[in-house]
Length: 385
Image (tube, rainbow, N blue to C red):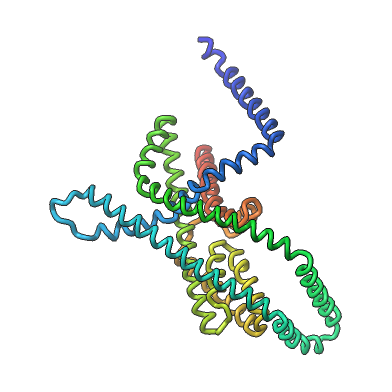
C-alpha cells in the first residue's frame, strides 16, 4: 500500500541516488586517471592474445562457413551420422581457413620485408644519384620560371641541412628507438601466435558460446528485451562482417590490379607499392592517399617521369574501384551518407588511429540505424510522418 502510494517519489529518489553515485564515481575516476590508464594497459596487455584470437576468429568465420558449405555438398552414405560428419567438416574447415590465413600473412611478410630492405639500401647507396637526377630534372623548369628559383633553391638547401643534421645528431636516437621497437614486434608476434591458438578454440566452440550467451541473456532480461538485443546483435554482426570482409576482398583485387599495372608500366618496386596500396585501401576515403603518397615519393626519387605515370595510374585505378569494383562487392552495406562516413572516419582516426578509421564506418552505420529506428518508432507512435 505504502509502495503504491509513493511509487513516483521512490522512483525519483532511487534515480537521484544513482546519478549522485555515478557523479562521485566519475569524479574519483578523473582524480585517479593515471592509475586507471595504467591498470587498463596492464589488463589489455594480459588479454592481448584473446583480443588477437577474437579478431582472427571473426575474420575467418565467413571463410569457415564457406568451406563447410563446400564440404556439405559431398554425398554421404545413407547410414552416415550427419552430426558426427558435421563436426568433421567444421574441423577441416577451421584447419583449412587457419592455414590459408597463415600462408597469406607469411606471403605478405616475405614479400614486404626484403623489398623494404632493398629499397632502403638502394636509397642510401644512390642518394647522390637521386639528388643529381632531381637537380637535372628541375633545372630546366627553374630556368623557365626564374621567379620561383630562389625559393626552390632555398628549400633544397634547407633539406640538405636537415639531412646532414639528422645523420650527425639524431641517427643514434632513431637506432635506439628501432631497437626497442624490435622487442615490441617480438611481443606482437608472440601474442599473434597465441591468438591463432585462441581463434581455433573460439571457432570450434562458436555454437556453444552463442548458446551460453543466449541463456544468460534470457536469464537476466525479459523475453521482449532479450529478443530486441539479439536482433540488434544480428544486425551489427551482419553490417560489420559485410563491410570488413567486403573491404578485404576489394583491397585484395586492387592490390593485384595495381601489381599488374605497375609491372606493365615498369614502375620500380611494383610488388612493394602494390602491397602498400592494397593494404591501405582497406581504410575508406583516406586509404588510397595514405598508400599512394609515400609510394609516389619513392618512385619520384628514382624517376620523376615514372612518378607522374604512377600518379595517373593510381587515380584511374581508384576511379575504377570507387565506381565499379567497390559498389559491386560492398553494395550499400552501411546504408549511411558519404558525409556521415567521412565524419566518422575523422573522429575514429583522431581517437583510435588507423584501426579506428577502419572500424568507425560500420560502428556509425549501426548507431545511425538504431537512432533512426527509435526516432521513426516515436514519430509513428505520435501519428507523425
